[in-house]
Length: 631
Image (tube, rainbow, N blue to C red):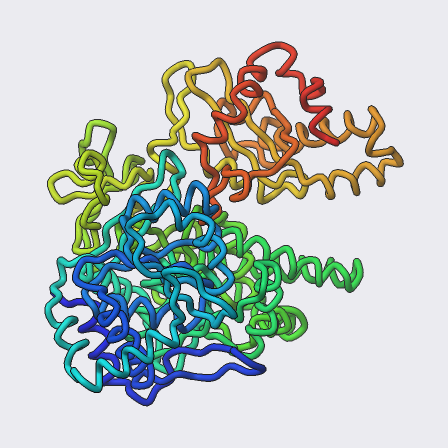
């Protein structure tokens, strides 16, 4: 069973002079070849060994995306230790502290920007022996050591013991732990997902069955490196193909880093980008805002171009055809006028996105497909390392999560664990070498998730007659009507929030209640613009009532007589709406690091509002709670 170390060495031998890592430390991106990467890995690994890092030790890694992140993980693994990758978005006093204590990390590798978080909680981490700081500081506190010093120690150790890193790494086998990757906790508290070396190398091999590209391809990693989606699809698959990976130049703040993305896209000119729904939506909003700014005629032509492309492309696999041949010259013209200029925003060489994370609305998939840069949606979860299925150039169907990667087994089961036939919805259950080693220090949860070597994902979906997988929501987050009917809310939530410019997010609720309700996060700026167009004041009672009625009308568009009537069964649509004064975010704990809402926390925080929705007063959209939320 191949380890990550063996995979890395094979790639270095095969692609030694090829650029592997790109980083912008000064005014331009500079490349690090595969052979140069190995040299850096060995220096750091030897230094870690000299510090005392050893087999099965947990070493936490907390940093923005950079070469040192990828090199650091490889160095940690070469010592026989386990990397505990941590999100830079974690709040130190609860989330970060919990993970460091729970994983029993003895070492932390941290960037200069994130160092204050570790310093704030170091006294509560008695097991912590050393803090390795990636960036030079003016002063270092107890237990802190700069990476430069670790490298110096590594040089000395390699000089005295040239084979030390090779010996430490060669003792590992595929079943040894590589990562403890903490889940984001959409349903309950985060769990430490144990991912072995073979989990990773197996999933790379599986992902390569649906994703192929040549060695000259480049990827700009926009997503956080701590998640296994970025690991497998972002840099280990690229490593396997001899391709290269760039990271966004880190700013002093998250906003500053985001502002670096457009410039970095122009400089790197990536061929592939990884995306999640939140990024896809933001990109689309920016693209549409740029087109609208050019005037109403340009906006009208752009939408005509999109609609023409939608009708030609259909679901991707069935695009074109003899009857649509006449559209091709006009689409070529629109491509020259509009679509090629949009692609230039991404560097001009982007072939496609690899989409993951939460459900991506089909309308957004059609949008990017029309632009000539398809967002090929896939499906996965941390417990599967994570890739389970994916669309690709050869086989794709918009709206689906693609074909199952190979080799892997999949079945769809009902609530009793019975396998269901093709087309019927149930829980997605998989089996393969990519299935996690279990949950760290949680045998009960492990036994519940893995039964007879089958991973019960907790996600709901079905397989169509063409073997495409459709993921429709969380099996565990099913809503239950008063009649006992169960249904998944995610598709409805995503559809309404995506289509409505006045609703940023919403969460449906029904726990055997008479009707479904919804907690709504309004887009206040869009609402204010609408109220101004109605010649009303935002702060006036008339303005607020008008805004609330508009929100209700947006939902009514899915009921009989509405623009989107028939899209969903009416009994699943929300009858009562609670408008919230704040959004769902990582900062308030109502959204996790992968931008999925945390239902249990939202339900707990707004329990009084939910209860109010099942009263005659609460059912009225113009109730005092909703009016006061629009401040």
